[in-house]
Length: 159
Image (cartoon, rainbow, N blue to C red):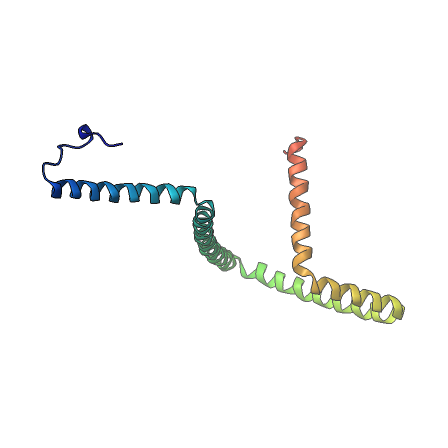
């Protein structure tokens, strides 16, 4: 166990010996507690999970902040470009947008006049399904585009 050489000096009185024994007990208790903490897998897993959650929250917070910054920069860039556009281009864009709206309305009228009712009902159901599942469809489209880009890069089709 403990040799006299383990300590700086040996106890010369019973009180010193008691004090050394008490100090040894304290140190031994700390060592046992440290070993118990290391072997408590459940507690260590909980601590690690808490650390991961904390880091995840930090990353999420940073991502949201960065997205906000990028959104603000994009809006600023859009305004800057819009301010620099000549009035002729803006007018032409407005005219084109009006023409597109007009043609779309005309196409809708023709559709309502010419398409059979069952087809119109099916089209309305499809449009409703698209509206209801917009996020899913956008995610699927994004995943498809990503897969296509990865496939393209893998095959060496990039320019």
